[in-house]
Amino acid sequence: MWQTIQTFLEGTPGIASEDELFQRFESVASEIGYPYYAFGALWGDPEAFADRPAPAVRLNYPEAWIAHYFAQGYDKIDPVVLMSPYALNSVTWDELRPYRPTFFDDAAAHGLTSGISIPLRAISGCYVLCFASGDERRIGATERNRMELLAHGFFAAYQRVRQLHRVDHGLSDNTVKVIRLSMAGLSVEEIAERLELTKAGVYWCIKDSKKRLKCSTQAQVYLKAIQLGIVAL
Image (cartoon, rainbow, N blue to C red):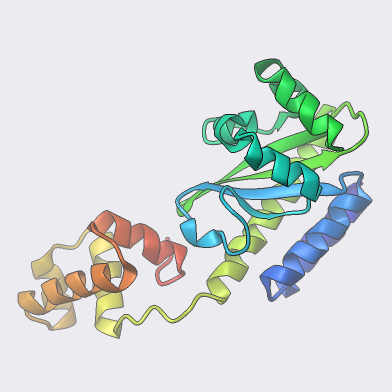
């Protein structure tokens, strides 16, 4: 298992698209005994849902289970979805089963018998990556640690690829500079002096950033700018 994961992690810098990333990830997950996966965005990234309803960004669960899942309203009571924003570490499905035993029995009847869910957090939001198998598995500490490493390596690559393929944000150079300096804690007066702008010019840039990034507050502008790769922490 470890060599397979290590090879994947070493190859992520060369991945240039989301499709390529998920294809490679699905292959390595299957190779280590988890042929099914689901990657979801739980909050903070509504643009992630291109092909499927929230919370799934990408997944290869059986289609019969996906249809049944939403038909039963499981997206509202799924222990994985409810737990991930608060969990500090990975959680196996055996650990979650006592909270919703019938849910996991139903999943097993559709071919998803064992699994592990790993919460992933970024400034842009909270995500979760689930690995699943149709076999009964007891996930020990060593395997859990390796799965967490694989998940975090995948997530780092996902964030990088998403930033590489963002559409043009349409912000002027001055507006980007105003965002950066404002995030650094400079006042409007200090920013105006630094950029040789009027205070009215700085206020215009602030207003323009909210309009173009579709944000209502300056804090939202900061988060969106980081998420889009306009600025970096």
